Amino acid sequence: MKYLLMLLVCLLPTITYAGEAKDLAEDPVLEKRMVGLAENLRCLVCQNESLASSRSELANDLRQEVRDQMQKGMTDQQIIDYLVSRYGDFVLFDPPMKRYTILLWYGPFALLLIGLAGLIWQLRKRKNKITEVQLSPEEEQAAAAMLNPPKDQ
Amino acid sequence: MMRFWPFVVFVVLAGFLYVGLSLDPHEVPSPLIDKPAPAFVLPQLHDPAKRFSSQDMKGQVWLLNVWASWCVSCRDEHPILMDLSNRNIVPIYGLDYKDKNVDGEAWLRNGGDPYTLVVTDADGRVGIDYGVYGVPETYLIDKQGVIRYKQIGAVTAKNLREKILPLIAELQAK
Image (tube, rainbow over all chains, first blue to last red; front, side, top):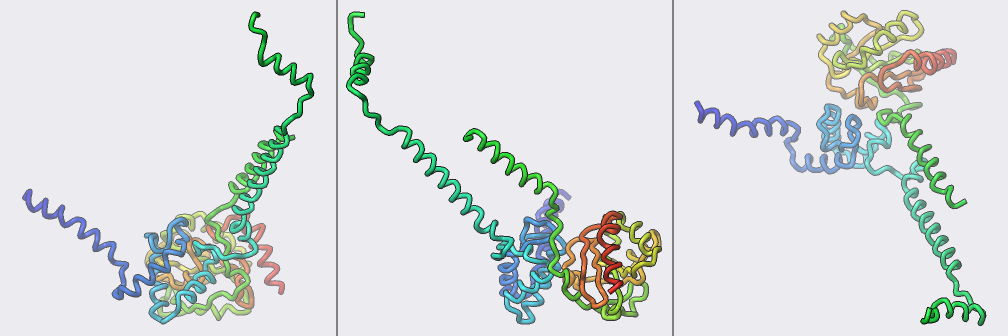
């Protein structure tokens, strides 16, 4: 009885694996191509997961759709265009350059430039503040007196 | 003057964050607005032998409501659709999305049926064509078969009053 139970426990991972493998198509080349494409697409249900890794039902259906379209001989770009025409640019993890994405693409560089300009401005200002001041002879004497006070005091 | 800078930065950041709070990341703008509604021919829920084609709706303003018996927010939306249906303003067509026919029928029997007609999309293919990613979703389609409005998530009384009904009146007058 004990051994039978252990044997069953050993079988558990295999059973789980069989459940997950349901997704795999018969054609491994096509599957690889599908996964490569789906990795760059967003699952709309769990929005920070890719279409390749999501377990949601919609992601499942969309993966199947991608497979079917690949079997029909459509190119990757055609499939991406199809999905974008349905779900919008939001499905792309790599957002295209458009009027409303300019800030997204160039914003960080703009911030960097602003930061650099601020830094240079500050450094210049500081440099101006610490310019050497020429002392008059009296001032020099006063300074020497302060720096070397008479020893006997 | 310099010491006000941190405050200015704080105000700008707070402004961005405040706007961010009111945005819903689940509301993805649909690229299908002002595009022709994808055509479909699907079996009817109550009589699967009969089919319904979206082309038959040309010349009418109609609502296509995507729902399912397993969908929780559809329950919130249901009384609003029932009310809208009783007012006879616009025909509401249901698309039972990835559902079993028995479950869908039972759901309508128990809660009431606001739909002129219900079709079933068992494998979700038409759903993909319409860019459905969360149920319920509702599409307002005009006389030329163009999608004019998409509601993601449950239709609320406020949304119906302020957006959908005025748009229906405008489209029907055309």
